[in-house]
Amino acid sequence: SYVLTQPPSVSVAPGQTARITCGGHNIGSKSVHWYQQKPGQAPVVVVYDDSDRPSGVPERFSGSNSGNTATLTISRVEAGDEADYYCQVWDSSSDHPRVFGGGTKLTVL
Amino acid sequence: EVQLVESGGGLVQPGGSLRLSCAASGFTFGIYSMNWVRQAPGRGLEWVSHISSTGTTIYYADSVKGRFTISRDNAKNSLYLQMNSLRGEDTAVYYCAREKLITMLEGYFDPWGQGTLVTVSS
Figure 1 (cartoon, one colour):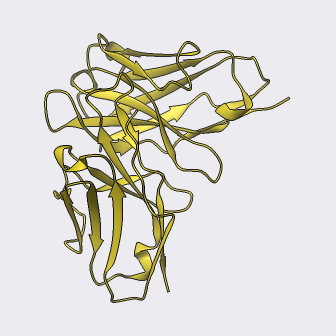
Figure 2 (cartoon, rainbow over the protein chains, first blue to last red; figure 1 turned 90 degrees about the horizontal axis):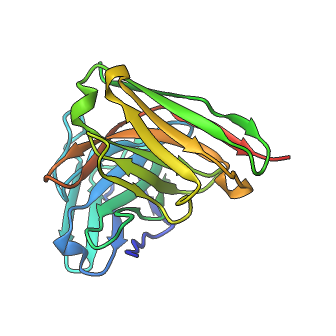
């Protein structure tokens, strides 16, 4: 089955740029979605289809996807961005096709 | 307002059964695929099951295949997850999530319900 690999943690100072990666074999050929989950809350999509943002998500959140790595970039990080972030793809070759990465804890220093 | 509300969670003994429900409102439930996703305490998200809008296409994670059954009633705007032969490792918050398609076959999860906690313990 398809495996998505995320770093367990990323730390960044307020105002700086955070980059969270999601690795997978030829992930550039797939559509990647990113979810933000704050403690005690349900996940919320922040980027879908590699780089699209749902309405209401700040422009500070952006995504890219190429080769074997997809990246969620958060510019001008704020304290309120501290959360767990998960990538997700659809694996067309599988009979259990929805796959999540292991998640990355973003800490704002 | 688009809303998903899960119910049916609780404490169950190993080997027992539980049926989760997800009530949808604020959108045309019958045209959307739906999913169940779970999260064990302190762990990441694990996709559990998918059902297409008409119920004709269903997928399960290997960890629940043969024990869990997903279903839906479009007339009642409801999604279900029948969980049998429960194990300790099934302990988790279970979320239902609508799938917004970006192609004919796949999409992203939006929105999610608030989740319902299932605890499997003797």
